[in-house]
Amino acid sequence: MSITLSDQDQLTLRTAAWGAVYLMSAAGAAGSAHKAATNGSIALTSATGLVGHVLAKAPKGLTGKTTAALADQILPALTASVTLLKQHAPDEADNFRRTVTVAIDAAQQGRPNPTTTDMARKITEALDAA
Image (cartoon, rainbow, N blue to C red; front, top):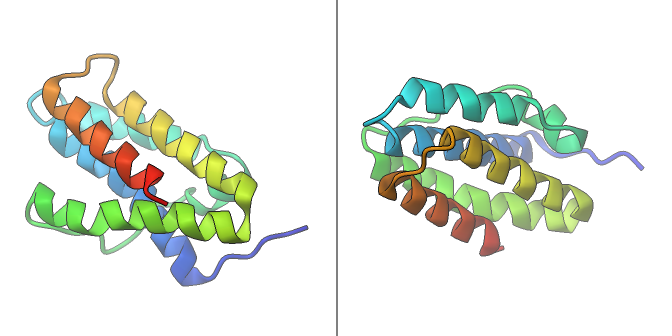
């Protein structure tokens, strides 16, 4: 059975997943924000299934002048993404959650610090809120 998500649903998933990488990059800016973003992006583009097809390209228009402004968009999108996937494609909800978790782990580059650890916690809580 083929699942088709609306353009808005796909944008929500992209905003959530790519946004999680942006948040991890911002949290790790004291180290190498570019390397965090690169590692997280590789994890997202390595996803398979419906989630992999949707996350193959980054969203346009994800902006915020502060990390808090970005988080206001991204954290609710993470919860909404898991909720909509649970409704439309339950197996893909687990795939999405695992993909985002791998991306945030990759963004930490094996060197978590208190800031990235706290951001990872916030992202995980948003995923679990669905």
